[in-house]
Amino acid sequence: MCWSATADLIAGGAITAVGMASVASAARRPLDLPLAALPLLLGGHQIVEVVVWHNGGGTGPATVIWAVIALPLVALWVPAAVLCAAPPGARRRLLILLVAGVATCAALAHALASRPVTAEIRGHTVGYSLGLPWAGLIVLGYLFATIGSLLLSGDRGLVLFGVLVAVGAAVSFGLWRQEYISTWCAFAALCSVVLWFWVGRRRPRTPVPSAEPAP
Image 1 (spheres, rainbow, N blue to C red):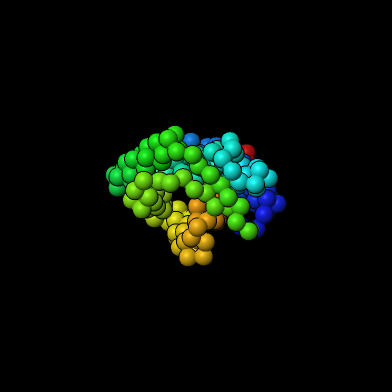
Image 2: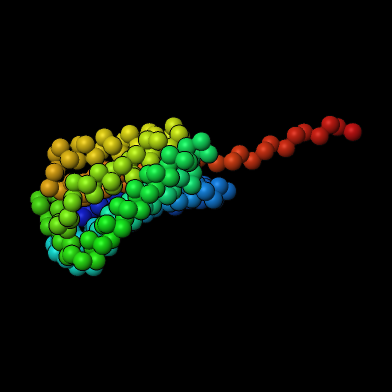
C-alpha cells in the first residue's frame, strides 16, 4: 500500500474488523459468506504487507504469502463468491467469468511455484515483481474474472463495488505503474467496506410478531 507500514497496519486492522462484522451479518445467508468474507481476506492481506515493509522487501515468506493472496487466490475467490451470491438469472454468464478465474488462478499459481517473487520498497510504495510470461494476457484474464464478475453480477451493490474497484485499477495504473499490484490491492481493500453495507441490506429481517387480539 502507499505511505508506510503504519498505514497498512491501521487500514488492515480496520478492514479486517469490518470483514468480521460482515461475516457475522451474513451468517443467515450461507451463499453470501464468501463475498462477506472478502474484506476479512483483504484486510489480512494488508497486514501481511506490514511484514514486507519491516523486512525491507525481499523474497521472504511474507512476500510469497502476499503474492499468493493477491494473485491466484483473489482471481479465483472473487468470481466464485459472486457466482454464489448472484441472482439466478445472472449465473449462466458468471460461469464464463469463473472459468476465466480458474484459468488465471492456474497460470498465476504455476508462475509463483516456478519463479521467485520479489518485493522492493520504492519510497512510499511497495513494488512486486514476478516476471510473468504472457503478462498482458494474464492481467486481462485477472481483470475480466474479478471486475467483470462484479459488473455482470446483476446486483446493484456488487456493481457499485465493481465500479469503485475498476476506477481504483485505472488510477493505480496511471499513477503507480511500477507499483500497480500493491496500490490497487490496497484500494480494493478499502472499497471492500461497501460489502458490509451490501450484506446488511441483504440480511433476512426478523419477522415482527403480530399483536394478539385482547381477550
